[in-house]
Length: 313
Image 1: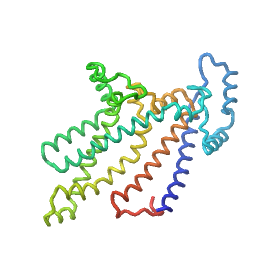
Image 2: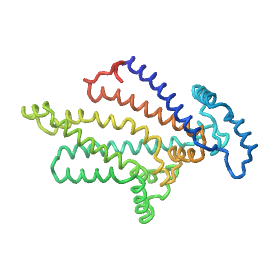
Image 3: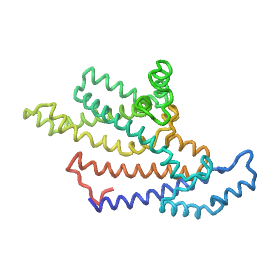
């Protein structure tokens, strides 16, 4: 187990370096620069390039980025908050915290509702309830998030006035309701569909049929044994999804005016603020890698028969 974790950590470092290199060189391959504006003179742009080290060769700039990251220095903003430390913008100004609060709330809701719905649909296979849940989850997966968010906002906030139009910094419980539902709805429906499919496959296994033939009651058999085995695909799906949902959804954050990391990342791309783009990309990539490792370790909890060795991918 220890050797497996060490191997995965080393692979993670290499993966992050590759992601940083791809992001950096593609970012610099796009024509233009952060300092272009109607009032910017060539002399002012040249001075800005020297100030932030952008006049150096790309390989030197990339090496400096990597060395700064090793020291924990994420650089400074070039345009959006010029001269401000990127780490301060992301962490101390609350952008990452807002996305975490919103993402974890949506993830918990998706798991707490999606898995029971999938189990219920599988347990009542062929019934009207199963049919209704299948239609509902199919529609939920098909409906774009921005459409759902807009409809919820227009009906519950604008027309009925029950909930706030702008959630801003998520100051209270009411401000969470619409953003969390909008962000979690797709994942809830997908988890429900995945759980139902996995559960049906587990129910049809020989050991379940043998236990039923021996007189074991269906409900505890399904909930105790079939559910545990059917959770492996769900856990696999939730790993990378967790990283993505925690780092924020641009659509939801923009709709409800939440100044989270997702919204800020898109703004940084539009403004070509290189250090912010690099930092948010590395943070997202690191979360994906970490969650994939957590998923692999969680397999042992779901199914003790699974072994992890250093030889595995």
